[in-house]
Length: 186
Image (cartoon, rainbow, N blue to C red; front, side, top):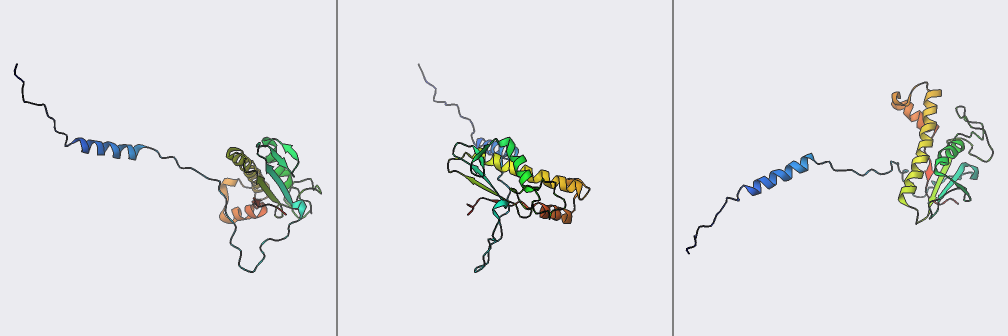
């Protein structure tokens, strides 16, 4: 029996070209997900030798705490549901306790904030708080500010929030400044 010394061969030179073209194709057509964070602007740096922490009246601070079991507490003791947080925050911010806010619709309670410009929401969480719950609480607080600002644009500026100029947007943000502190309050 005679064996043939002929071995089949094929040209592999173009295989690298094909692999390269497939790689380029998948890089161009694939979508790369971008992670989004929580959109917050950090405060400006305090100049040396200046005390940049003004005294805050205790009634102007709403303490929101998330414990290690992802439970939300207001003022350190009252457990609330996540769905109730937005309403509580809106009532606190829009209170108009000192009567200086002409656009506020609050009930002027003595235990809530003087006005939206003075109101601070203090958010504290445990080291074991889940990220999901932390983000959910941040979202509810953001919704509270958004709804108050939207009401302001409709009632005071007689416009929808989508049609504001830069000056009007600045006015809305000054009316309801987003003041959220994650530092421990003293």
